[in-house]
Image (cartoon, rainbow, N blue to C red; front, side, top):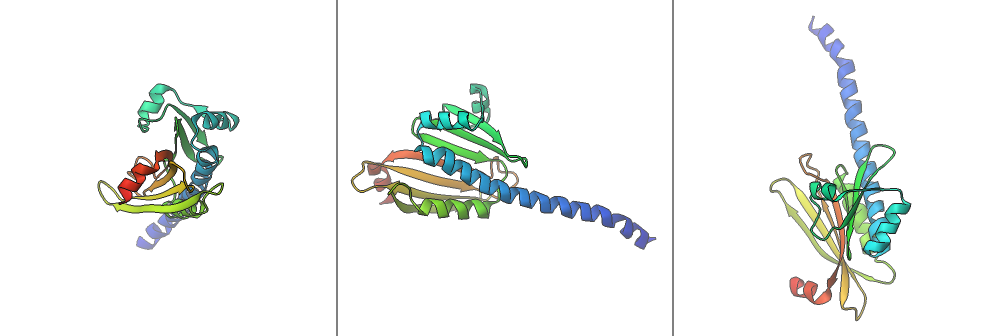
Length: 193
């Protein structure tokens, strides 16, 4: 009798395993996509709200209303935001305001986001020098990490801060949030010292 019961459960267990494997593949795919969206939408446009708006419209992303922006809890600098979906079900948010840009994904493989973000951030852009600024970790209220890089050029009064905040926790509101903003160098120097 027990053998028959166990044999009856095997297809159910196999189906659960297949679902878990597909969910992991999707999280890996979404991680690649969120980093690409960040570097194509935010970084390539220099965190410039006007350029990001034009890029989002060309990419046919769905503009969010002011109420939707508030619902998603974007940072105070955000004035415009868009939503997008990938063919395999990934959901992404792109937001901009002044010289600030953010891309968020509800589901994304943390290790892949961190690896791809570091690879692209360390490459610098347009002759800019890349400097690591931090790799922080916290466990409250759930596991969360943040990588930070600065891009700057010799003699510039400003620098671009690039951050990737990630979590593998299912209870995290977003498993990936990548931000870019322009900061006066005197501020980042004071914080670093």
